[in-house]
Amino acid sequence: WAEEITVDQEPTCGEAGSGHYVCTVCGEETEPEEIPATGEHVWAEEITVDQEPTCGEAGSGHYVCTVCGEETEPEEIPATGEHVWGDELIVDQEPTATEAGSGHFVCIVCGAESDPVEIEAAGEEPVEPAEPGPCGICGEVHDPNTMSGWWTGLLHDIMFIIQRIAFWWI
Image (cartoon, rainbow, N blue to C red):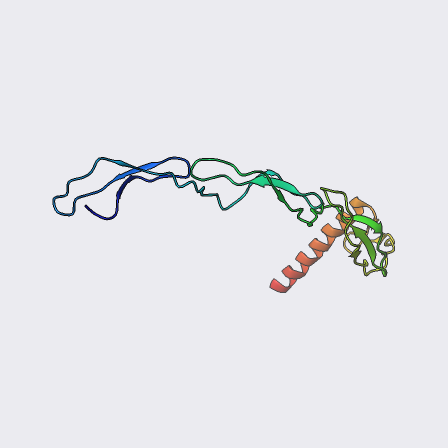
């Protein structure tokens, strides 16, 4: 008989397996024999999360045997310590043309406020409203501070450019 058993069914952590011996001379096989259960679970590598940890609170989870489905006792998953900042910047101090402002973000999980964030200065002094004057193309007075006056001025600028291009092509 062979020294090693030929395994017909692998034993698992909770169930026995079976196997037989083979004669090395004639190839005859013995009746199946029980191979005892291993008693050792094969735990999944990743924890199954029961409660997600947050920035300030621990969570919990357990491992599952990939063979029999048995679960470990719940284990603590440490708090992440990492806030989940919202998208909205809360302005604490408005920037001016020459001075930077500041603001902060708020954690959507625990409500903590981020360190101050600088808001760049605008970099330009406010523009004084333009004085209405006669149009260089049509001679009419258009107020550039109104939407209709602004559009009219833009259209006249475009017409002026087209005239200049046409002049150079001719």
